[in-house]
Length: 142
Image (cartoon, rainbow, N blue to C red; front, side):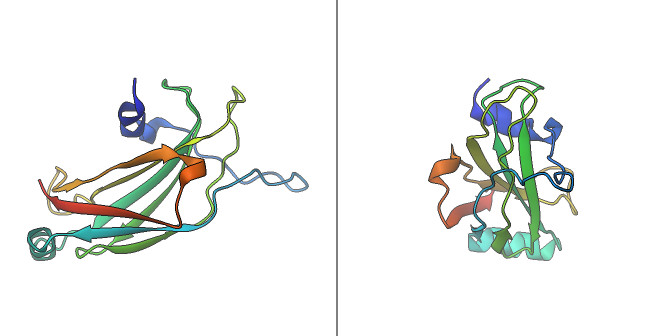
């Protein structure tokens, strides 16, 4: 399964809990921003529907199965898009001990007005080491 498939199944990934008292925190990403821009037709349609936009950031190890270790942060934006501030996200290895090195950003509608996603947004998939201070995600209507 490729990175697209892994990103699509991220909902089943484990999310890390805070470390117990006295345990050093795990490595983490630096805080960064995700800028979501929509074309005029998408802004008009989402505004008319009173829709919101969901922004998901996920980091995972190289596992491509249900045992993959993933840590995620979710944010919501208004119908016009904007900037989601993403705090530091854990890079703690999972039970297999594999390093968490893969990062992805996925953007879609919050499904307030429709059961299906209404946006076609460019995914961002790369190594955590190449995570820029701001990730730009352009979107248009499906």
